[in-house]
Length: 395
Image (cartoon, rainbow, N blue to C red; front, top):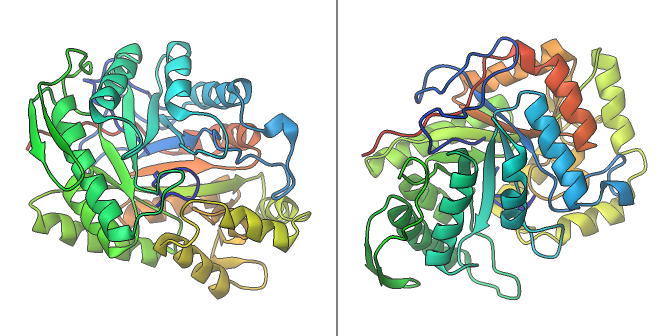
């Protein structure tokens, strides 16, 4: 799924290929170091608004919040300062700035936090992409993770089934090269016989692949090829169902997945203040403008986007589909279309409910991204047991 330039729901959490060196620590109640699948702290990541997705009022562009090196740098550094474990750098084309170039630029300015770099399968020549990823990982001291994107390339339209077949081939070859192994692959979309590049990641292994999607083709691609399956906001029961489904699919391939949730958050001192902030966010939204914003995304007709619309339809008059889950954000953006809304206790409790449903990592955001990063970092993150995901054991 790719509505915000990510596959998570991009897209989009994050892990590491490293060995704990320069590992993102925790804030407050979190514990340092990495964790193994199914145990320990949850990874908590923030969102770098590289795709012109930052507002004070949804649907009302603010030139000061447009994607730029300066603005996105400030968001990233605020996330590191606030103790987040990772940050998603989304990928777009018509919107915002380039994620890979930004990752290389921001790498020397960070010391602890991981970067979750979104890359579109098919956009770059595979050997060059492998070298770029390995080089940026080196610049980060082993702190790079990868969000796999399967949307159409700009200027093309490919049916869902072949598009995901292409994505799976690219994931397979990219992982092989980043694991330092030679490639001899001749498929439907990739034909390549090549030794791995000399440039290698710090660990010598491929970074964790984060990937999401809700179509049958997307789910099977994820089950066979990714490490962390990303889902968008849903009811707790809905998320639990997705986790159970994907565990079963992965098991048929002899694999184990971890799971991430991409969601917005609105946290304030009191429940009433949080709900008021949510209402204010859409107080200047013209529905026709919101529809236009949703429609310009490359995945505007995807299965994941349809589910977000269903949640809005099921919501009460104030936009809440269940306690503390507000769908109003989906009125003006494609992709992840709901927010966890409440005071610090309520937001932390909701995240724990998702943990109980099987979620291992969170990719969070809020509007404006700098302000909400500080709200969450000060008032919720210290209450959470959190830390970066550990690399998976080799099969």
